[in-house]
Amino acid sequence: MSAAAEPSFRPAVQADLPQLYECDPYSRNHESRRVELRRVVQQGSCLLALVNGQPLGFATLEYNFFGHAFIPLICVATAHQFKGLGLALLVELERLCLTSKLFTSTNASNAPAQRLFARAGFTRSGIIENLDEGDPELIYFKAVPRGAQPADPSAQETSWGKPQAAA
Image 1 (cartoon, rainbow, N blue to C red):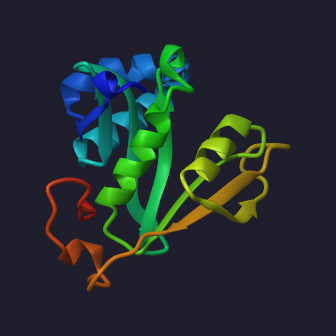
Image 2 (image 1 turned 90 degrees about the vertical axis):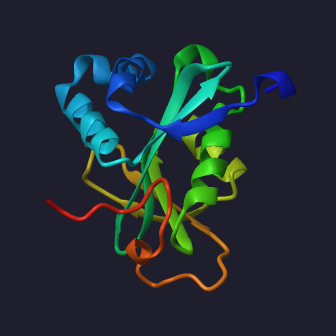
């Protein structure tokens, strides 16, 4: 990515949902993904990546993985993949992360995501069988250095990514 095309980031809002669906081909044919995207946008857990003001990717960050941060979804528009935007999203999520441990995952069949996580400094941490038939889920971990970090991420004030109380 050139210096002129550095991404900017902001929380996604309801009006961004059509652009999220456009970035995520899976959501076009799966209502369950659209429902999930509406949920994470509503709770403020979806980060939008913009290049020259155009939304080209997004990622979600939640705090429901055994008390640690977890990135359940990272997506870059097909025409803009492999240009550094996915890595920039991961770096920004790490910066925003409120816990000292950050996890993510991908299917064993998703070699591009595995390479992205390795480039971002994540290490393999485990495997979950039987989520997708014949395609195990690989878990990745990254330590996030923090100073005096509260044990409960909800105790720390932040403008983005703060865990939401259950309704």
